[in-house]
Length: 428
Image (cartoon, rainbow, N blue to C red; front, top):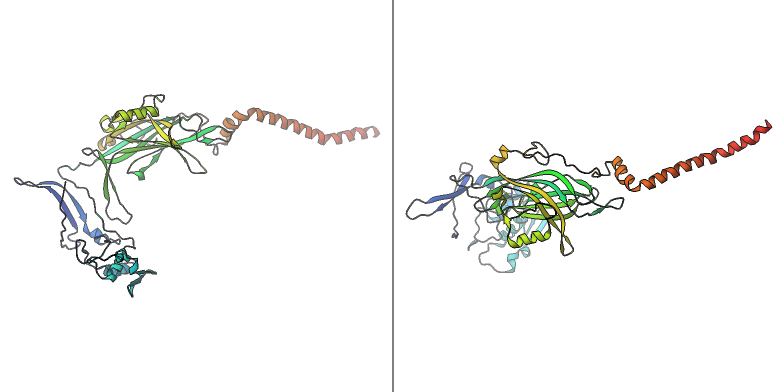
């Protein structure tokens, strides 16, 4: 699709005419043009923005040519207005220099001073523009906006990805316990690419001695999806001073990572798997069949399926890690993936983790071994399952030796008095 570049200048009265509507049509010579979609821009928000969001701040001040200045005010006027709005001292101009906010700027700071440009305006205006660009205002940019059609109001549909983490197996044992045993405190972290602000994680399975973890934990990820294009629509502000959000279209990819929890240092990353929901690797039915060779063979053979078509999957997926330059198996995750739309989500609600509403399906507390606990908060279990189990012979010998030493100490303490009494008694 190709468009010619044109600039339009319109006059309006704020706040009476604050909404700018841009509509895209399909041109027809023999019939009425068909409306494709439209978008609405609030001009009043941009005009009142303290970040200069009206036109954006260009890189150069040109009084002619293709990049001619478009703002009604010159850079020097904008800089003066910027100082007034923030109760700052006005800029001081002297000998091709500007002093502003305890800083001094000169013509030599300008990139455009290194070459001649016949379209550039006066040097003081170019220098004022350079100062403006140092004040964290909105820079000139090309904006991308979504088009909405009243005939197809639901073209961007809301979906929910429900991911239930059941178990892990063969996870790398990254830590060593106080008794010298290899172990890992396992948890799983997950998010959708483009939705990094909605990262979720399971609780921790402490003291896993064989790489097994039990969770029964549910992740819920809402996202906007365009079925026709098979991409997610992600709307974000590029900068904290941006007025409007920028829409990006990305593939729906789920990231799952296995971590080793540490209370007194940074958690250790063990491995991960990335799943494209449109072209997903089929899971293995058992943990024994879940291998890296199977992963590579399936990818090479193109044996992938779409979760949007299949709706739900359950099985084991391998997670990969790195040992130097070599890819290794870092663990296996057993999980259920389910895609539902907004209506189904309301009809069949489900909470995060094991929170209410805990249904569809209901998740019970995992049956973890008695040795799964955090030693710092469970001194009794630490004594019973760590110290007693491994050092019970040493502890018993220590107790017997301690008792014998106590008796010996009492004997040595009491013997002199007892002997003296025996020697004195015949003389009485």
